[in-house]
Amino acid sequence: MTLAGPATNLRPVARPAPSELDEETIDVPRTVRFPVELTPPDGFDPERLETWPRVEGRLEWVEGRLLYMPPCGDRQQDTVTDLVTTLGIWVRLHPEFVVGTNEAGMLLGGAARAADGAIWRREELGAYQGGLRRVPPILAAEVASRDESEAHLRDKASWYLGVGVSVVWLLFPKEREVRLVTRGAESRHRVGERLPPHPRLPDLTPTVQELFLQISAGAA
Image (cartoon, rainbow, N blue to C red):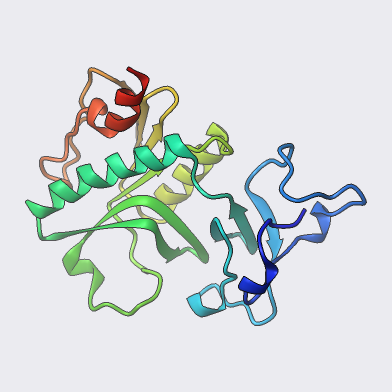
């Protein structure tokens, strides 16, 4: 498999891992199951963002593997917008916290991963360094894409909890459902319900409806 788009704009270039290639390889076939493993380019260092490949899509470094996901589709991008709007309004009232988005990068437990939305306590972050954050957020939120299985999101939720994240929100736009995961429990919430509070995030109890506002309007 190869990534579509002009190769001249990708520097350094990431190539598909050898195990992905065969004589029938084509550009991003629909049969590919994401995430796809890429072979890291020469000089790649997951701790240095300037060495990461430039691709149209999303990259993570997990268990020594460089994983690629394609750009967001319509349901996912609209839901991420509603998620970030909700978190942004909340953080304006709670300036002791910081909200990250746009594939909010973090380097934890030897892996470099990115969240659709995340909340840190400001005092735990220190000064800006221009790189990946090395402190686990209190909340990490992920919005399911068309190409992402529920099992993949659950694995990522387990990883978050394992590196010190307190609570994970998994948003499923097609079902308009949120699954809230902590170390000791998991709950499912649908339109008409409100997410329960977490003791480390005062007053953050959005309704499920506001997290899917745009796609709900589009479905009307």
